[in-house]
Length: 237
Image (cartoon, rainbow, N blue to C red; front, side, top):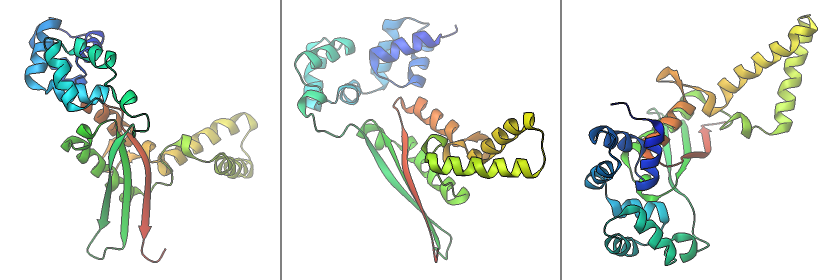
């Protein structure tokens, strides 16, 4: 049977499991929501999922899960009713986790890249798939040397400067005025593709961009991921 995205989202809301596991659970249970929940609970630690979703202490999650008759949704409600969720436990708690990853290129070690990627929970930060994704990002940075994370992160002053340069180029080529705007848009798109990490084509597979990789990892891990910052050092530069 086909599984609708609405059912997958509903199951995810009920269990806090990843999208891929929710899809698998619905397929295995022929769309029966109750059986799908049981399938997820048999293959994914409900206590950790409660902790990831609410931020409550593991002990509180265990207690809520038992008292709710091992009903995930009821356990979430119970945690919130008792004020065990992280927002109430500690208003100053950091609301993200993640890792720093570095890469030193070649035997001569004259190029180093570093990236900070965040997720929502420590559970995902320790996940091997998350760490593999972050490693691919730091390799991309070393290989393609982006200047910005995304086009939205480019300072307006710099963007205006780039547009002015492209406008002069178009004018010097004597292009018709009605074509100028489209030509400049094309040049900007090329600039973003070359200089913005998320717009760059993955150096291992140019059918994908880094944004595509980010979206895939986010879907697989079931949490929002963010590339927050990066650095590149080259010897003597």
